[in-house]
Amino acid sequence: MLLFLSPSSIIRISSVRNGVLRSASTLALPWSWLGALSAIPLFWLLILGWILGLFVAIGVFSKRRNPRQIKPHYQLSAPGKNLDRRHKSHIRPLAALLALFMIVLAVSGMTIFLVPPTTSSPGQGHGPGNSGNGGGTNGGQSGATSNNLASLSTSLFPVDQISDSKGLGYSGQRKIIIDPIGNIYVAYRKAPPGFSQEEIYVAVSTDNGKTWADLGGGPVAIVNAPPVTSGTPQGGGTGTDQRVPSIAVDSRDQIHVVWYGRDQVYRGANERQIKYARWDGAAWSPWINISPVTGYSGSIYWQEHPVIVIGKNDVLHVLWEGADSGSAGVQQIKHSMSTDGGNNWTSWENIIPLDSSGQSRPDAITDQTGSLYAAWYGGVSGQTGTRIKYSRWDVGSRTWGQAQIVAGIEGFDQKHLSLAIDKSNTLRLVWDGPDNSNANSLVKYSSLNLNLSTPQWTAWTNVNAITGLNQSDPIISIGPAGTVLVAWQEWTGSDSLTATNVSVYIMISGVAQSKTQLGSGFSTNNKWPVMSEDSSSGIVRIAWLSGQGAPYTICYGQTSLTVS
Image (cartoon, rainbow, N blue to C red; front, side, top):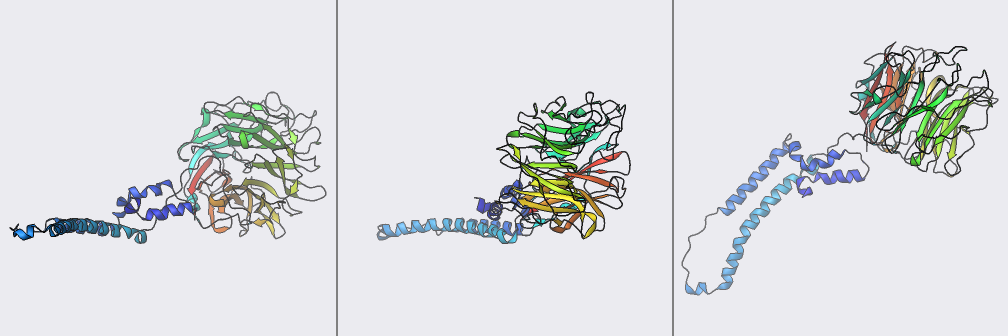
């Protein structure tokens, strides 16, 4: 019956089995094919076939019969001939029905050749996914990707307005996630009504980013840190702000958020601790300091830039940078974990032996076994500039391996990285920095195939070197069939923080013509792109900050990618 209604559906089903991305609505086409065909001349050809078949059937059944005649006695005694005539009387209607069937089947069968299979955009993504096809410096592309990124240059929706030009920064720590039913969450900071200090907010959209609301009806928490009475806060701000959130969702649809800031207990000018809260579907839990770092009087504690990731069995991992009493005020990469949904946390640990050079802004990802991979940037003793580093936490032994240097680019500052993992168990890493051939900062890429017995990072490449502008703060996402998506900000001058001519771009790695500038409908100054780590469903979701001055608008856009 499926072949009779639409034989081309056989081709569609085969295509799905061969990995071509199709919406579920495509498979429903055999039941709605008449509506589609009515717009083309072939529909009338099909109607003509039906009418012709109908007239043939009518003609056969209405054919005039000869008057009944009295037959001689000897003919009545010929049973063989009577049987033959009865047999022939059945042939005509059977032949007519067969002719009718063949006409309709022949005409509809022509749709295989005349009507190409219809495609539609993939549906909403659901939950965490890791999709890809292994190593390669071009992002592990598989097949041909239709470039639908261009719609992001015009399609955008406002999420919220804030007064802080860094309220959505920085890009490396994940600030946008999708839950298993397709709701979208964006984390940022702003001042609640009636407050001067900034607190952490999570906005949620249930309609693909068209409209947004504060999750819980307000901020994640009101920490209400006291004013700084002595000393100077490092890194700007008044010292009362809560800053730089990172967000993740577990298998039970609970939303987990971490950030850093001072509070009523840790009151020193830079006594910032890593804070955590959980959304259980109805309310936010009271915030806590997950693993306070104590020091000595007058030191700069400055715990900051946390990232939260969720591993196998919903184990929570948080990494951040911070000094401690043993590091002589130098930032180290720290780690704490929770195995009970965030209620209790392990004491912090430095993931590598103390380094006399500062280590900064980690990003992390877990694999299917629960092992954890971290990357960050930091100095190397005896060398100038900062380098991109990497280490692995083994889920079995719960220990960290030796730190590795990802790219051999000495003498330049390599910074601001973003890390992802694909279905083939290959790490994908981007960062920014100059090199021997480019004085301006460019987004760089490397990958690590974890399936190899001795994995080695591939030689780094510049993602898009055809520019004289500076590129910084990249974010990476794994698209359908292992497509690597990279977004970044591009600017002139000495500092992206103060630049007023910043543009945000997104590109499919290895496909230069896919480079697309994100929408500038609110302002020509756009910064801090953030994406979800997983775009394997074919839906690319991205947010960024737009504005020349307060109020700044958090913008959101999404589009579909298909891969054959």
